[in-house]
Length: 86
Image 1 (cartoon, rainbow, N blue to C red):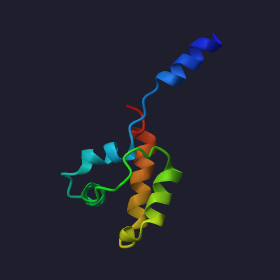
Image 2 (cartoon, one colour):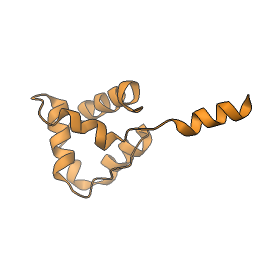
Image 3 (tube, rainbow, N blue to C red):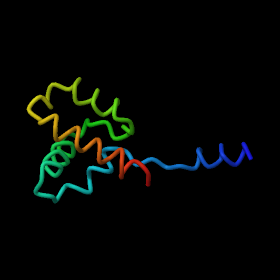
Image 4 (cartoon, rainbow, N blue to C red):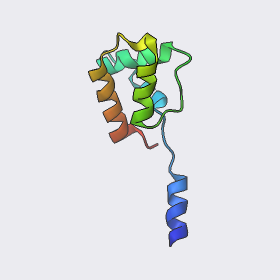
């Protein structure tokens, strides 16, 4: 039984935050604005999957200073709730 549980955990595929946000590129919403901003920066890390990693990326990068952190936190919350699993 333990083997089956380990196998299931290893088989879970996670959708990155970058990939999740691509669904919002055409939206005329704050999420769409954030998605376009992320997409416009080629150096944005494409493999982030945890809220801590995502927040750290935005805090560390000077170019994101003008973004609304409430919108970012909302995007992260939606990603963690609905989008992190493929």
